Image 1 (cartoon, rainbow, N blue to C red):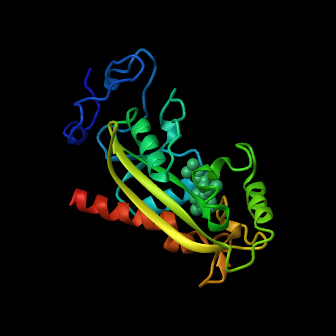
Image 2: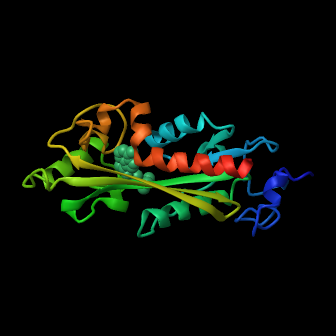
Amino acid sequence: MRCWVPSTLRRARDSPPYLFCPSCRLPLGMRAPCGLKTSMNPDSETLLVATFNPGKLREIQAYLASLPLQVAGLQSLSDVRPSPEDGDTFEQNARQKATYYSRFFPGSTLADDSGLAVDALDGEPGTYSARYVSPSASDEQRCRQILKRLENVATPGRTARFFCCLALARQGYVIQVFTGAIEGEITYELRGANGFGYDPIFLVPRLNRTLGELSAAEKLDISHRGQALRKMGEYLRQESG
Ligand code: IMP
């Protein structure tokens, strides 16, 4: 049976020649008995966007629509458990997720780790942004908890920033990381219904609007994720040219 790992990936620097199933150790191209397989077209350059967060996925897909790539989501991988995520920094987590998922996927894998750091809360929620309050809390509950903890903090003390680290990996190896950050202030109430996560409490002072009040395109233009995605796009363009 012909292995469907694209030849470009077989030549990837410092990489083993084929992908092996981490559970049964057989080459994935041979449709391992553990049932692991993907639905990818073997002859195309496909990027796996490795996130379960629908907000991130929307923003990343909107940007990737401008690149000559096929895009796949995590649903393309069957029987793969979620990646561990126990790093101390955004970069460690992004690298961990990208490395993990790229072992199951023949194309390139992109992982995003991002979050909000509030100065008056000593950088919290930081890498715990997605689990802040409790893993099952809603975005609104998390926003309200930040506002509550800042009840006695007045504006110039309400500064904060979003960080984003994107890691691009192939066959279990990180190829490159791209970062972005945006500075802002925490509002006194939720404003705007766009975006996701902490967008409604993150004010961009020069626009006097929160990220939740911006359109998807306006946010991508200035956001931490938009910055990191543009760096990645530039890298991919150079790599393919
Ligand atoms: P991660 O999946 O561990 O990277 O968690 C990221 C979390 O940070 C998300 O669940 C959001 O709560 C928050 N976050 C990251 N990026 C954004 C953004 O662009 N807007 C609002 N919240 C964000």
